[in-house]
Image 1: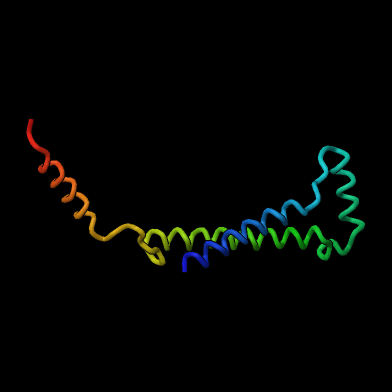
Image 2: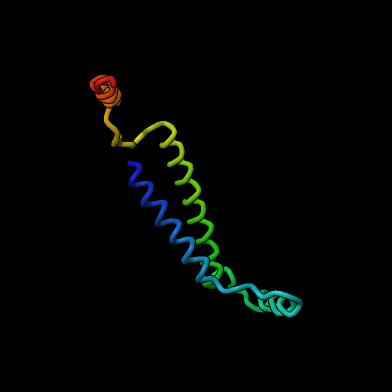
Amino acid sequence: MSIFFTILQVLAGLAVTVIVLAQSGKSAGLSGTISGGAETFMSKGKAKSLDAKLAKMTKWFALAFVVLTLVLNLMARSGVGQETAVAEEPAAVTETAETETEAEPAA
């Protein structure tokens, strides 16, 4: 189960990265302020533009990434979906080490 959420989180992170890089840069400085104001005034269909769609997609994928991060964190704390790779009996290792030290002859 945690593997499924991890894969979704990686895909959401990659999607956010690609969408942010696909957005056009914002103009800076006084010239950007003047031209940006004229651009929003003149373009009535700004909500349907590609940049607006990309901005909306960025918000949704970022929200999905945060929610998946919280879910994975809660799953890790509760131990859900974790397979143990360590043997259940670590005491056998310590007993073997004790018998080896006792078997050595005293000098």
